[in-house]
Image 1 (spheres, rainbow, N blue to C red):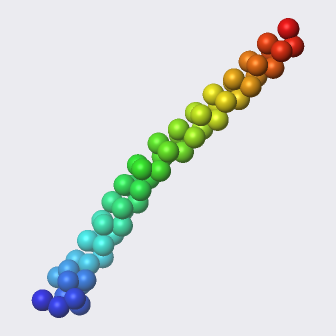
Image 2 (image 1 turned 60 degrees about the vertical axis):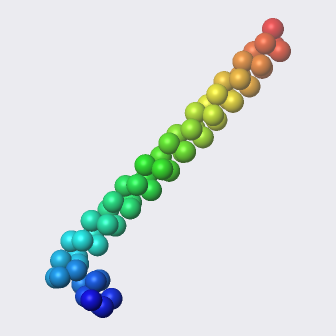
Image 3 (image 1 turned 180 degrees about the horizontal axis):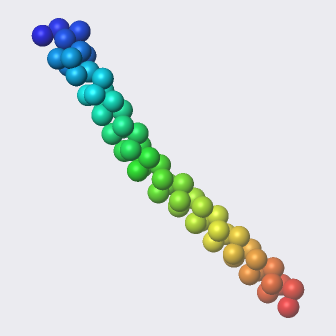
Length: 59
């Protein structure tokens, strides 16, 4: 078996490589999504703390 045959996948290369690509995209999205969500939550908490501190200093 040579590399050309491997990448050709017995005539099913389009389906195989598309499946690999979609799987990779989904795995990467599952890694990045919680990281972005965490950053948003931390940002919201920081804003809430600042807002609370401003309200307390105005009283």
